[in-house]
Length: 115
Image (cartoon, rainbow, N blue to C red; front, side, top):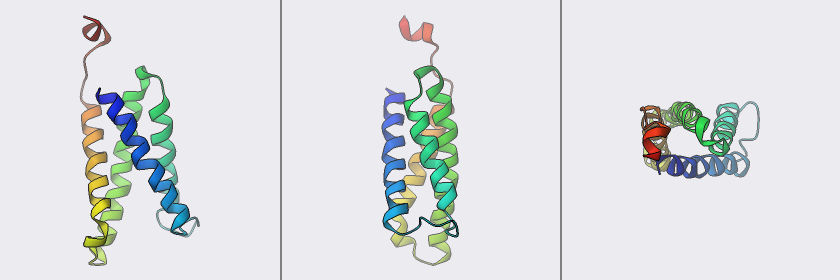
């Protein structure tokens, strides 16, 4: 169940992030978040489609990276005193951090799941 939610969240974060890069004309190397956003989108999508055995740790790392990138974006709003414009970004950073923490915790072994 946790893995299914994490896979869905990975797509829910990565696809709009990628779309925003294009729609907001951030598709330039001189844009501060261009490369980190591309990396987080690719990492989340690839991790989400990996086989169950390796998806959980890959998603934990990807969500940890995404939480860092998106938290940096949150503080760019804080620096501009425009945090009210970045509330969705705050929620996304919190969701990514929660997912990383949840996935990094030890889960049941396959033997326990089958029992």
